[in-house]
Length: 242
Image (cartoon, rainbow, N blue to C red):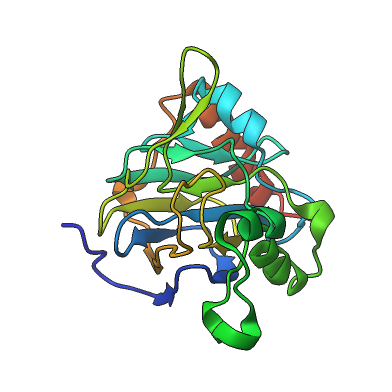
């Protein structure tokens, strides 16, 4: 079944908007691309010690990959695991292209100010992230390379990055089974390489449920993930951050 059986909570993030919140270990966060072609830029931080955060380089090199999909884990910069991807109908999630900023949005789409458009203003990914990070005592220095869920970017033989428009279809979803209590920060602004001529980013639905026992070991077939999971287990066995 595509639907999670029981939701602890769920919420809707309109295109271009942003969100942050704590997702507890032992729960699964489902991100759903509502209408197709959305981008969910995500950053992850340890709830107990926010200096520990998602590490793109370790995540990629330990799993010998350029992108994320089912069976991959999201690593922290302390050798632990935030979450494992247990289901994925999109099949490819960008890890290297980062966030759009205000200058890029202005050059691509023109001005879209709050005074005229209210909540439909043209927000950048970076601005959305900074608004949410500020709610948790974090700021620009805490912005690290993020994951762009639902966006596919490949590299051609000449080394040029290629954005695959409409890679994600309406209703595509990805399940993240969390192993740590995690601050999740999300922006639904356009991907920085999205060639769309109009500012019309897609909406994201979020839903959290208790993780199924079947998700245990979903990413430990990779040796570095198994070590990261053991480091995470010991972190909590020893009482977490002191």
